[in-house]
Length: 352
Image (cartoon, rainbow, N blue to C red; front, top):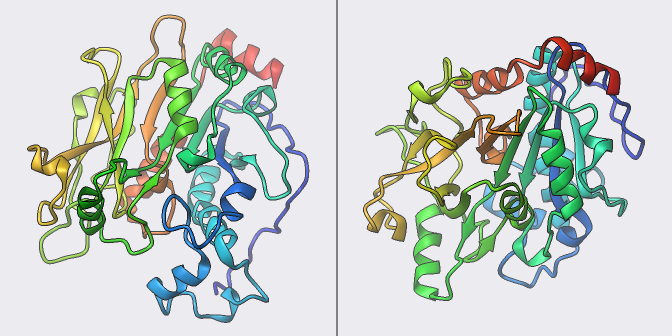
């Protein structure tokens, strides 16, 4: 374990609002019910997270140290959920250094059973809200009409940014042969033949009129002869926010969603990046002639919506599957987005 002095940990206390300073205040919202996910029947093959036993077996010997034993770390599915929490610490550190604000982390239903819908308690001191859609579809998490209206009102505030991250949708079909084909394509023994994520974010996208659907779980191509993810195809002319300045790749993850557009309106929604797919592993998406998938999408302010909407997978902000310098550059670009100015800034400061 690192000998670097760590900040003290806090848990089970109320969030202390962050004052407006002119720099972006970022919040993460995990859409899952932690109890529901961690209490899943481990004999079920599909639509659940792995147990720590399964993680240890597949990733051996990565989790064989004393810090991962039953005395020091949660076992079962709960331990795997905590790995996700731990994996965002590097992003939180990088973002905090840029903004001067700690990244707030919320869960829809937390370990202690407290439910927190998205409302003013979260939004009042948030400029960038990152909604990480790792709730399994079968858990039936849905954004309420009140949450959608709260987000819609918040997005009227100049400079806000909503990042939606619905995760993959592996094995959506009843065709068992296709499920097996998808499984062999991504090659991750910890992902079952069917693992469908993102009902909460899907309902949020529907309510806000975001014309995107998360599809499949696609394995990125790598640079020949290496394990390094292949460079992104970047539409630099569309990147008006400079999010991709100095960025060439995100991090490798074996099953990333394709963010399929459900509209032909290219003025309201822009595909900023596409990721080349591993074409050596057959998949229905590539059999249809596709060689890349949409990995980052931007919807600029439009009409009454003064804020921005982005779509990017939650694993881009984690270190579970490694990271590269280019990825940290993307994090810092996101954290550095300009905020409101003038009268709107003063109004934001007054309510926060």
